[in-house]
Image (cartoon, rainbow, N blue to C red; front, side):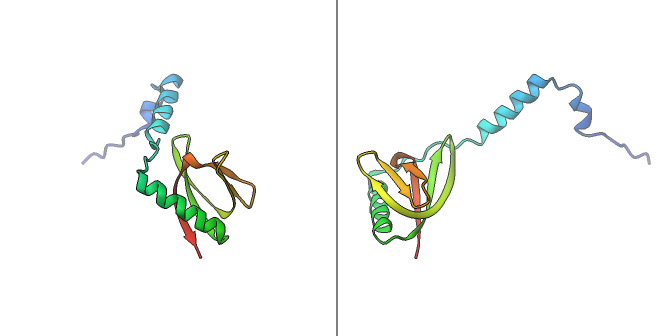
Length: 108
């Protein structure tokens, strides 16, 4: 029997124009985008209460933040909740707008 040794994807690389490669990479990045989770009234109320408790008790928290079509986590201790500017401040100087906070986990 004769074994066929195919070059796989290597043979297609020479046919790909740089514009095609760029468009494929952009498409893959957009494909990984996450829509902002919409929280209902009950979930927003629960999140607000949990934030206030964590701030009052100086608890370590892990926040889920939606920004630029991605969700990431930020860990720290809440130093201030500013209702006028609608911002949350962590003790290490980071700050996040309330509208981008989509989840909270408290560590005791």
